[in-house]
Each structure stands twice: as C-alpha cells, then as structure tokens.
Image (cartoon, rainbow, N blue to C red; front, top):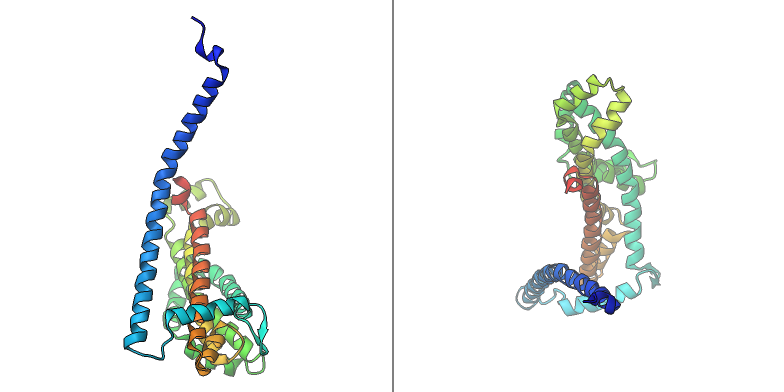
Length: 292
C-alpha cells in the first residue's frame, strides 16, 4: 500500500503544526492562569486600599482628599509633568532633580562603601577597629546629619553639598556591612584552593573573593538605594530645594492635599522601580539563580 504521507504531502506538516500549537497551549495556559491570579490579588489589594481611604475621608477627616479627587489632580500633574505652571516646574522635573542628587550621593557612597567593606571583611584587625564607629554612626537619623552638614559645608556648596552628604552618609552602611559580611563568609576551602594554585593577590581578588561577595554587595546596594530614596525626600523638605520632597512639602503648605497624594504616588512608584532594578541585578548575578 502506498504511504499516506507520500500521497498527501501536506498532511504530515499540518500534523506537526497541530502538535506544536497544542504544546504552546499546554505551556501557555498555566502561565496565563498564574498571571491572572497575580493580577487578581493585586486588584484585591488596590480595592482594600481604596475602600480604607474612602472610609477615612468619610469618618475621620472631611478635609482629607478623596481617591477620585486625588486621581483627577494626579492626571493633571502627569499631563504637565515636564512643563512649568505659573513658573513652578512640573512633577516630572521635581522627580528628575531628586534622581540627580540620588545618583551623585549614592555613587559616592558605593565607591567608598565597597572597598571599605572588603577591607573590613578581609582583616580582623580593621574590623575590630572600625566596628564601634559603624555601630555608633549607623543609627543616626538623617534629620540630625542634615543640619550638621549645613554647618560643615556652609562655604562649600551650602544646601546642595549638605543634601549630597546626607545621602552619602546614610546610604553608606547597608553596602558596607553587607560587603564585609560577604567577604567574611568566604568558605575556607576557597582560600586553600587559591593557595594551592598560587593565585596572586589580584587574581585571588578577581577570581575568588569578588565573585563570591557580589550577591552580598548587590543586596547592600539595593538596601542603600532604598535608604537614599527615603533620605532625599526628608532632606528636600528641610532644605526647601527643588525636588519631590520639596514638592510634597510645598503642596502641604499650600493646602493642596491632592498634590501631596500625587507626590506619595510618585515617591512610591520610583522607589518600586529602583528596587525592582536591583532585584533583577541580584538575580542575574546570583549563583543560585544561575544554576537553575
């Protein structure tokens, strides 16, 4: 009997396409169901927040802005995010000003904290010497550092330098402590293998110590960025300089509470984006994720 596939050459190709389509459906349905569940939980969370918010407006304070009024003002602010209204820069310019300060202060902090953490983690002597300093200065509030920085940098940039220094010193500790913890957690076998193969100091640093410490460093940087974003809002409220913190404080003084809610949304949204970025970096360079 003649082969059916020879008699009908398109039949086999259609069968392959059908199988591939079924495989895609089998893989896609669970993923779609999981995405739908996550979206459902997110919508449920939003509904709870909006209901509690509306309840506060109705029972606790009639002056508190309602969700609908805040949403309308937020849309208007977004439409004019990068324009000046009555000479006042839009909320987009305010966020960019804060991000510029964050970029400078956070970069300086990371450039100091990572080498310092490596030294503290490698040397027990340095760790014993500097641990009391770290433990004393780490809990100090940015509300204390900022006025001290104003005095110290009165003739060296004033408010701008004080804001950058406050970001620098408050975001320093998570990166420093996590880097030191990563270095000190290096298994002794790694050091033994490096000695057996006669690694130079630089080769040991680049091939053994830094790869092992990198996930700890990224965790520290993630925590430091969160701290820096919190601090910049408080520092701008104190300094009266342009930024999202000043925007929120100015809205409060003007009695525009809807704009304050919009500022809260901008602060939370940018903070979430920054955190997700560092989380993605951590997953990218994590040994556990790479092995899966």
